[in-house]
Image (cartoon, rainbow, N blue to C red):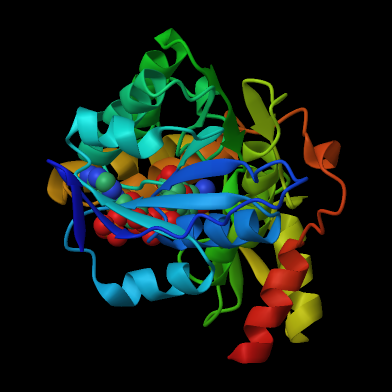
Length: 323
Ligand SMILES: NC(=O)c1ccc[n+]([C@@H]2O[C@H](COP(=O)([O-])OP(=O)(O)OC[C@H]3O[C@@H](n4cnc5c(N)ncnc54)[C@H](OP(=O)(O)O)[C@@H]3O)[C@@H](O)[C@H]2O)c1
């Protein structure tokens, strides 16, 4: 390891030398590259020819770094709390992309240092770690994780840098078990209030590919809204019946008022306030989805050619095949 300046270390630097008659590939700085979505964004950026500089925390295990190295990503180990170190790490980038995940320490505090570093380094564009439903339409207090993103959004919008948030609804991947919507064992699809309310689902792969395209596009607007599929609980029940060959029926535990009460009670009894996704937080997402409050429209799916959107049907069929 080669110390460069106090606060940060260069682990590996392999910026390709551009050919004689070739413009250098744009450099995209990526925070959160060791995470699920971040790793996929890194891969998608490399596929599109970008130089990717991943900022990782000191002490990051080599198992997390090896896949990035294999992609040809340059890895900088940098103290995320050091503005001078982060500023040096952002220098020369065409865009800073954040795929950080966490509570206030990550979404507000770490992203604010990343933002200030990007501004100080003269980076023209910033993509925050939003990757959710359209929380700008959700009332403050209705979703703790959205409130954190809204807090950071206020700082981002006050900063002299062009920002683009990618809104993708829920990751379609969560339909295979994480989200309490499809109950595979009892062959039920849960809905609250309205079985026909459409919900937005986009696979993590699609989100990563689209975000990479957006990172390399200097003309992005403030918001980009995408959905690989828009489907209701009733639609999911039909899809599950068709792909499994077994009837899936709808299950209505109650309306949105009942869900709100359950959220309140669960949050009081089991606060787990340091977890990113305690049960009540998951239920807050469900409330936002089934109320239609955070529904995405209009969609920007067609902005980049060559995107192959993955449907909920495809995700669920693949899941059943692999069981
Ligand atoms: N719409 C949806 O359904 C949905 C579902 C899941 C996630 N998401 C969103 O997708 C984004 C990425 O989530 P993910 O699941 O890919 O996250 P993840 O796998 O948990 O990765 C989180 C990343 O953030 C880094 N990190 C966490 N706290 C940090 C801090 N304080 N300072 C610096 N780095 C920090 C981690 O670094 P280390 O490796 O050093 O820990 C890691 O690289 C988030 O915005 C998340 O909310 C959306």
